[in-house]
Image (cartoon, rainbow, N blue to C red; front, side):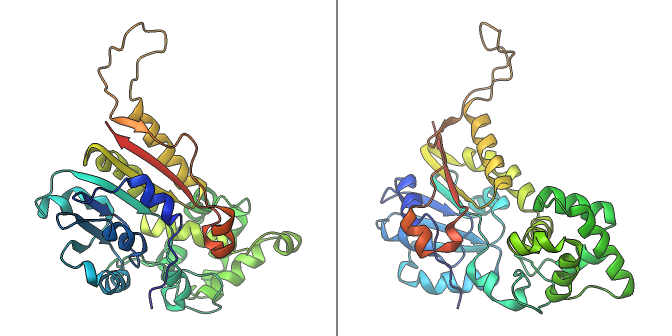
Length: 311
C-alpha cells in the first residue's frame, strides 16, 4: 500500500488559506495525504487538481480521495507541465498550489523501486516516472568519471565524491553495476572506515545525487516556480515543502526574485528596469516541524515549508 505520512500537514493546509469555492493544485500528489485535507475544506464549487508522475501514487490517491471524486481531477504528469495540464482542463488561474518534494515512504520502502540504500539488493532503478527509459543503472554505468564526480559533489554534497566516482568507474570495468547492494558496497569501499563508523549511512548522499540527476529534480523545480506564481489569482498562495538545502535554496531565491525582481543598481533613485513585484514572501524564515512531529515521523526531520503570495 502507498503509505506516506504527510509532512508539515497542518502548517501547509493553514498556509493555503483554503476557500470553499477555490481551485487548488497538488503538484506532487503522492498518496493524497495533503490533498485529502484540502478536499475536506472545499465546498460544492471547490476543485482540486492532483498531479503526479508515479502510477502507484495515482492509484493510491485515487482510492484515498474516492469520496471527493466529484471535485477531484487526477492527472499523470510532471508538475513542470502544470500550465499545460490546467489549460487542457480549461483552467486559467488557481487559488493555491502546493508541492511536497519528499520521496514518499512507499517509494523508499518498496525495494524494487531501487530508491533505498537500506535494502541490500534491489535493481538500480530510482525512476519517479516509470515511463522514463533511463534508470539509475544507466547513470552509474555510462556517465564518465568527471560527470559522476560532479553530480555526487553537487547533488549529494559528499566530500568523498571524487573517490566514489573513481571506485564506481573501476568496479564497472569488471561487470556492470546492476543492484543497490553492489553500489552500496562500492561506495563503502571509497569512504574511510572511521568516517563510515560515525557519519550516517555512507551511501545516502550518492543515492540522493543519482536520484536528483535521473529525475532532473532541481531543474524541474527551478524552471517551474515562476510559472506556478503566474498561475495564481491575486491573493493565491504557493506553498513548497523541501527536504534538503539544494531545494530550499532554489525556493528561497526564486521567491525572493519574484518579490523583488528589480535589477537596477542600488544607487539608482528610481527603478528603470520596469520589472514589477509579483507578490510577497509570506515566510521570512521557513516553517519547520514541531518537536511532536519530529518524534512521530523521523522523515520530517529536514523538511522546510516556504510560502509565497501573489499580489
